[in-house]
Image (cartoon, rainbow, N blue to C red):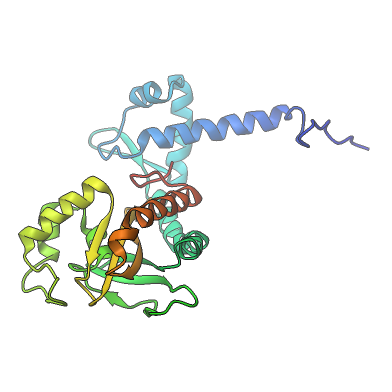
Length: 273
């Protein structure tokens, strides 16, 4: 009868079998090659990949050949460089479907910690679409929104968070006048909004100071998945109490964003870690 592997004090195998170590090394090397290709739209040569990963060129050649066969990498027929393949995009799409599920515990924790309404939205076809909406129990003024509802792009904190960082031409195309004056506080001038978006990109947080619903303010931050899809997580509260709560809400929101990114295996700037 085969004896089980000797276990250390933590209950793990004292030493992995040679074939296990070899398999782990192979996966690590493949991951290194994929990370080197990340963001390289023009592709990299084998020599450049070897330089970026520290792997011998023959090893890089074998790994790239395997990635090409599986569709995880593709070769540019004109330039000859290697870049990420179409299968990566398909895998990223499945991550998009699961992101709301991964985010849910963090959204619930944020709602419970702040005792405020929490939402998650996505930028879809130039619209802010609600994916999750969590009002705290026992809240005196209970805000309501349904999954699939469309929120205003130019006035909501979510909309501003989703717009920030996009090319200015895209922002202007999505902020074409006339913009709806939702409340007396709604900013409808595109140039003023663009200035606000620059500040949002600098700080990482967007606010709505009663510009969408009278008496309601909000703060939001953006999350991008591996496919570049833009999501926002926001906290909505009473406009009168928002100034006093703002710093604490921003801190809690930032921690929530960090937790969602970690759960999804994403970097702060978007894309896999």
